[in-house]
Image 1 (cartoon, rainbow, N blue to C red):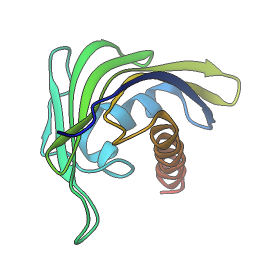
Image 2: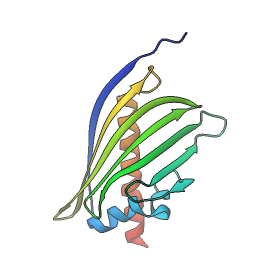
Image 3: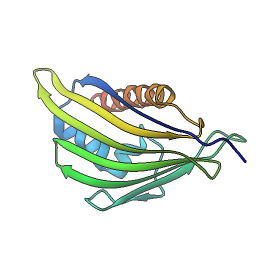
Length: 149
């Protein structure tokens, strides 16, 4: 039998984007806008109780499944969702994530906080935080390309 383990961890990633909170919120709440920086969803129902679901990965590589449920939404201010992540059909984590949007002089301060349970050594908080930083950089690139268009 495989060795089972549970590791609890939390991390916070912050960014300031040169865009108003309404634009940053739209990048999370609109399926087409979100697909510019996050994997395109097979299911995208952005409302409290709604679900976001996608599967994918590199060609010939592992398949990741992201299955989220929106728990709380305050337009232009806050998004709270819970999600599970699977790797090739094995559950690797369960998390609660809060995205806060605060207006600042030059745009929006985004605070992304994830509280996770990482299972059986298949994922770690450090790996997830790294991936989140990459995604927040992609979000910044998407917002910048929108303002140039």
